[in-house]
Image 1: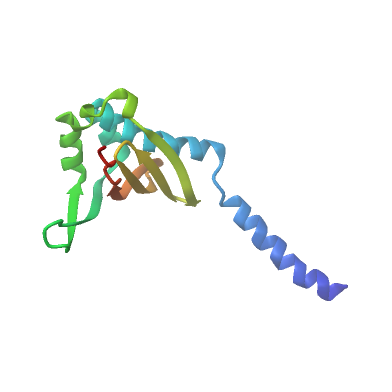
Image 2 (image 1 turned 90 degrees about the vertical axis):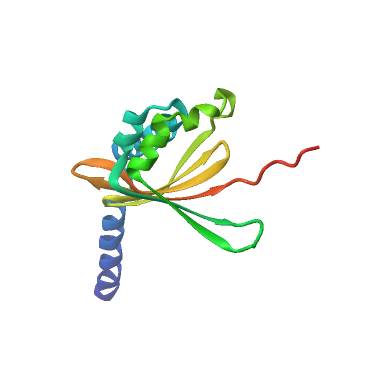
Length: 151
């Protein structure tokens, strides 16, 4: 019986630690708010809201394929370029009825989270970190959705 307790006790301890690392409702709401500041800020052309969501060292990246050569291309944008494109109204071109913003927290551990946003014409994977008490987007890897076939 003592051997069984010594085998079970560490498993219970590790389970308690894992449970402590799950996303609390408050943290989930804060992570979701950051993702909403990002995507709703984009659609609204609200540069202040976009900037609030981003860490200044943000890297937003996409791998695309050059249709002429079939070779991959690496596209990169920093925080200030994204804020400026938001300010210029790039997201306002998407009609309100197409402004999709499905947010899913895929994972969280302590001060790191991964969030998926399904938007109108693309999908974003956000790496979000808790920085000085606030959740900030550190990295974004994104992919365009295929264009619908025209009839």
